[in-house]
Amino acid sequence: MRAGYLQFRPVFGDPEANIKKIRKLIGKKKFDLLVLPELANSGYLFSNKNELKELSEEIPRGKFCSALTEICNKSNGHIISGICERSGNKFYNSSVLVYPDGKIITYRKLHLFNTEKKWFSKGNLPLKVNEIRLQNSERVKTGMMICFDWIFPETARTLALQGAQIICHPSNLVMQYCQRAMFARALENHVFTITANRTGKDVKSDGEISFTGQSVILSPKGNYLSKGPKNRDECVILNINPSDALNKNINSKNNLYSDRRKDFYGIN
Ligand code: ACM
Image (cartoon, rainbow, N blue to C red; front, top):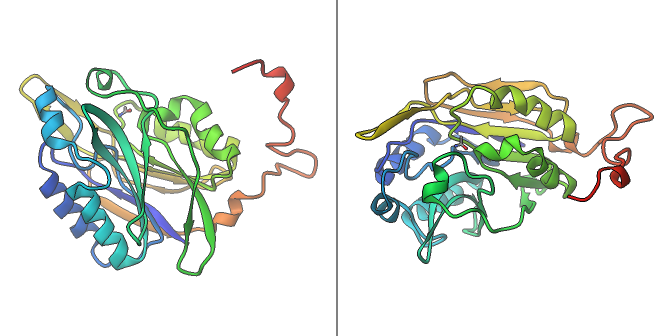
């Protein structure tokens, strides 16, 4: 299957410009699954609730979801993207899985990072695997987690135990660890991981924050199949074989799942 990431710098406060950039960078590329960064519609560094109100959208009715649906429909591919979501009077740091037929599945970030706690409600939806159907009719199970979720290994583990073959990871990474740590998330679960990170800075009158780029794709054996640049836009789409993630054997005597000693792990 053709799977990859789109790394770019969302402009804070300009969803229209971000949609335009996404369209341009995707162009006529063919993909089954493409992962975009966290908060790709809005940018990251909020200063007040009014900005949140203005830049968030309801799923699936908003303009960003409509634009992604149009792209997926035209290309017969699936997109997983971070999105600033409004639901009633609450705001969520969410991601959407958009199908070519317009179906949209939402995940809300469970582990909010730093000042995100000031702006967003904690995710309240279960971690769930979603099947997508490729152009060759093969079915592949995908899972979503968002940025800082990576540091809680239970997130990727829960998705993997449900059968995720590819963990899709929209991100706005600011620390230096994740791109290295994804080696462990991929290897310990024997899954593909696609971390789509953003580049550049959000600069506001009350502060600024820099992001680390270097989006990564890992194989179930922990090999880096792609590592993006620090500061440039990049759309990488690779041929991968998702069935490589189905075999959980480490050798003829060890299996990642059946060797688990659940009785000794205690509760929770
Ligand atoms: C992060 O979770 N955006 C660092």
